[in-house]
Image 1 (tube, rainbow, N blue to C red):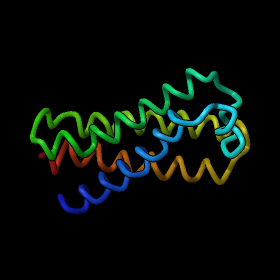
Image 2: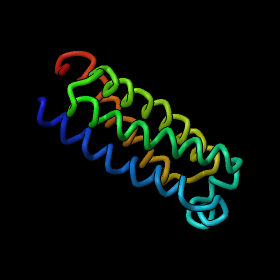
Image 3: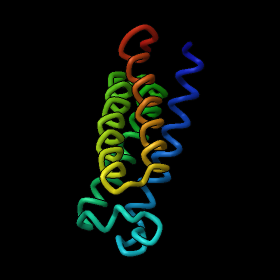
Image 4: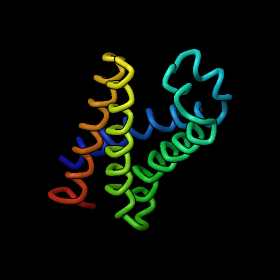
Amino acid sequence: MDTFLWILQWLLAAMFLMAGVMKLMQPKEKLAEKMGWANDFSSNAVKSIGVAEVLAAIGLVVAPLTDIALIFSPLAATGLVVLMLGAAGVHRRRGETQMLAMTSMLAIVAALVAIGRFGFEAF
């Protein structure tokens, strides 16, 4: 089970690191061309989401790899669940069913990591 959770952690970290860096590096207007939801938020809010995604990606893998503050890994996963639930609400409101499915799936994967690392397969 530990290997399975590690795979999920690395996949989540890779996805959220890429997404977060993209939100941090590109202006909101450019993001809005592919991510219509960005028009609903201020530039600072979009950047804040990017920061949260990057920090969560780091927390998922760096803390356990360095064996320092292991609690950060399940906390990062829990933060991603909250972030993806918020994103799912935005996509549902906007009628973006494909993105709703994707964010829901990511929330479920992050929840599996959080439950696994808080409980039966802690570090």
